[in-house]
Length: 208
Image (cartoon, rainbow, N blue to C red; front, side):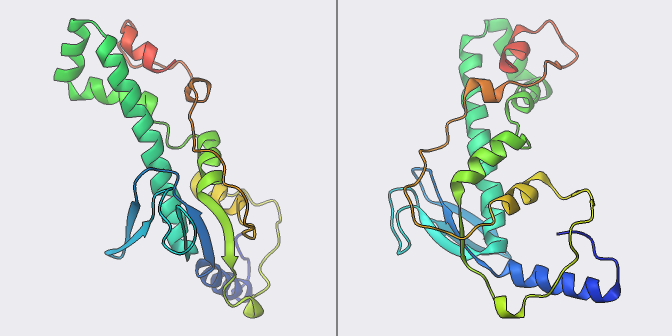
């Protein structure tokens, strides 16, 4: 959706945003345990992939605004867990001197996680969102939909998560679920921009 230019367009724009926020979205949890998010201090839990609470195993239908928060948080959870596993593996293989260095210096250890945890990686976001967002179950108040400004070349400056979420804005059609997300070594590769200590083999290795 693009930025409106007139007062009438602005009013229609905000009404449409509100209407769409109440759409019912079907989401999926690919994890082995339930995943809970908080919205205004209320808990919203999506059952694990083996549990059926009435919508199908690992599935739940929630308002769009809850689905957006759920998708972002479970995406961060999946990517950060993979980063934790990789850092743990590298620390186990590191020399004693390097272990002492990174265990005793929180700043140095944080750099390892920052190189591994790429929660803003567009390709990983698309891959994970493609699995956890199953589609639009029901469009709220569709008969009252307002005409909003059409595309006029305005650059979308919203966070990458919101842009990707909207790219999956399709009607839900029951079908076989995809296999759980697997982040490959190739997808984890980042540009070789190392911290100040360029001689650290462990820092280089975690970024490769």
